Image 1: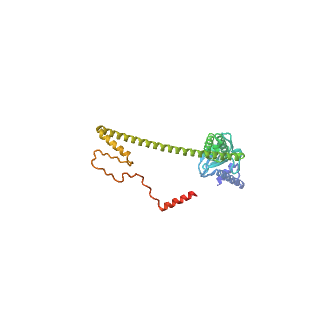
Image 2 (image 1 turned 120 degrees about the vertical axis):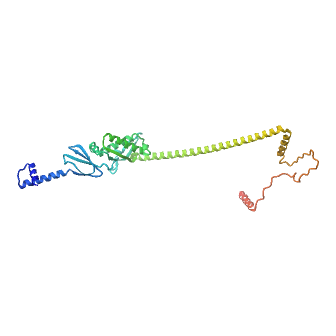
Image 3 (image 1 turned 45 degrees about the vertical axis):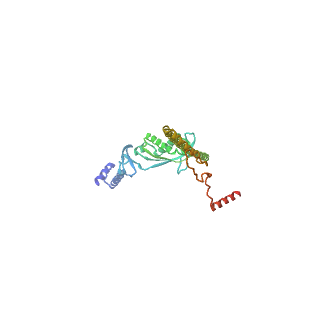
Amino acid sequence: MDNLLRRLRDLMGGRGDGPRSSVAAVFAASAFGLWAASGVYIVQPNEEAVVTRFGKFDRREAPGLRYHLPFPIERAEKAPVTDLKRIDVGGANQGDMPEESLMLTGDDAIVDIEFSVTWRIADAKKYLFNLRDPDEAVKAMAESAMREVAGENTFQAILTNGRGKVQIDAAALMQKALDRWDAGVTVVEVQIRSANPPAEVLDASRQVASATQEAESKINEANTYRNRVINEAKGDAAKLTQSAEAYREQAVREALGETSRFNQIYGEYRHAPAVTRQRLYIETMQQVLAKSNKVVIDSKGATAPIILPPDVFRPRVTPAAPAPTADEAATAAANATGGQR
């Protein structure tokens, strides 16, 4: 201890051995110890530390208990590299900010877009030393990218089914610009919170949107009716085609059958003309006289009297319909009475 005090006194320029010199030496030793201990620091699990020596980058430090040479020799800056950060453009808790959210679309319309950007630090060194104000730089780039993407899309696309594409394109353009700046930032997501016409024309725009939806609904109904009619017509056409083909097949088969029958008869006629003529004559007369009350008798070669049955000359009439039952008669009478009334 005495040796330490003696060295401190030598460093302080003192030569005395009195109590005053001893107190000064102790104070100097304490100050030196505090200054040396000021280099101890803790890096949290979600952080990465960047150590500079005389203002120049020296090394990176992982999470844990770390030490750097005291200021002004070395200095450690920590950045939350695993945390997700978020910025709001166009107003959020602070209210509407039309100077940020009003943008011009590709069809020369004005749209009010409020959106949020989620991002994280990809490189602590670049994030801390390449950007003067990283958060403001990210916000400015987000606004610029969204304005450029809005200028490439139509008003209706941004308000309706093109919103997803706008978000993706804005995130890609923003990431490209940040990489060009070597900012050490990764854009995770761009999300449009709201996209509306300006407040001054909001009612008129809603009426236009309602009319557009109604027109689309009518068009869909017309397309549905057209498709139904076309399908029915196709079904009827197919049915008629099948019926015609079936009739053609039937007629062809009947014609082929008649042709075959004629050929068979002709072949028999060539072998026995008289017999064939007689058979054709008898068959024809049988068909012609099938419903006639006349009786034709060929008495050539007959030697005995011909006895005909008693009902041969009775008129051939269609059998009468059966008499109606009592219930059927009552129902017919009731119907007849109701018709007269």
